[in-house]
Amino acid sequence: QVQLAESGGGLVQAGGSLRLSCAASGIDFSYDVMGWYRQAPGKERELVAGITTGGTTSYSDSVKGRFTISRDNAKNTVYLQMNSLKAEDTAVYYCYGRPNRSGAVRDWGQGTQVTVSS
Image (cartoon, rainbow, N blue to C red; front, side, top):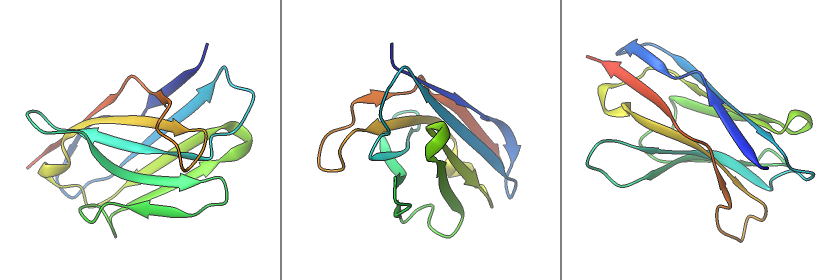
């Protein structure tokens, strides 16, 4: 059974930092792309960042320069370092895995809440 287990969410003051982790288990391959979406109350799910097995990264404009995505391919784990957090970063953050970069997201984590107080 495939599982993406997230950790690291919580409550932080504006300007603070958090680090999210997501470990994949139950698979015998490495996702071509892993990354993070987020969904704030009343809003659609938004792509935050993604990273390939080769280390190529992409970010939404809203987090560029503040968030850093990284991964450990040997551990099938992806990380999101979030700095200079703002109230508008408050959302549920979902880890995802795409077996092929040209295909759809196949697997999702359960979500972890990030709340930034202003």
